[in-house]
Length: 346
Image (tube, rainbow, N blue to C red; front, side):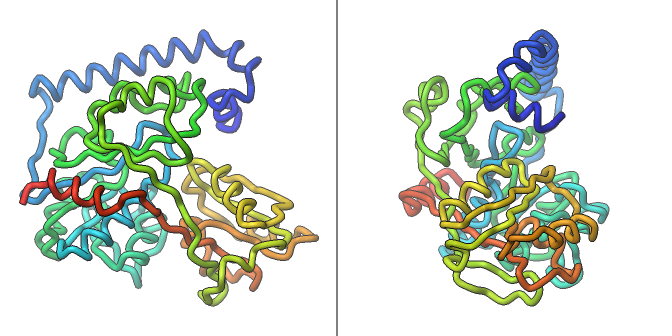
């Protein structure tokens, strides 16, 4: 069902969209009403908004996933550290098993205990990654235990119960117009006009057009792309040049909000992707999944994402399993950091 919905949103299943349109449209109207009621509660002061003692930067999107938020959070946190700030990354830790508000332990936590993206960020940045259902509690823990002086929300655009100083919104420049409708008619979690809530827009994959371009007119807009860094062999953590993938017959697999973007990147790097295996976002791999991929013939390398790798590194895979490490590259990055700092409380 999920794959069918994605095809409908991307305009690849016009017949299914036509058949399901009345149902999807009706559910979308109900969803919009619920979102409007929630927004009204906060604007009227019926729902409480917490005001942390440190500034908060939110990185988020309007869609159901797949715009590279976590990679941007990593980049911004490291840039803020370079200029003398003490950032802490705050996130929900999707599917985590640990309870309460806690800081991810890079050595003892697992993707299962803390969440895949939280563990990946903790290992990549070596910064405090605070996880919990209530973000204000996570911020307070970060202040008390680590002395953070700025909190960065991963996936924070939909958060209304915590005051945010800087609202940074990532938009997909390649999004199909048929997808720019409210869920479940499209993949938007909030109406497109909510872009006006943002302070800064980041555009990935090309240029905005249509309504999105009109709505962002006059707003600070920066472009981001995701570039490869290196390949990491899962068996022993050895790092090799990502260009090793060029010309190789590759089995690619991932469990992302937008798996197609990962497969496309591998092809752009020259890989011959002979098989692309898609899993749901935040999928937890079992031995059967890996054995099935190991059994496929005609494959020289098996490549996945860093987010997926943190969930399978201890399972004893073959030496041809690799993860591709990427980083966000932001156009006019110094100007972006200047804008962010200018909007933060001192």
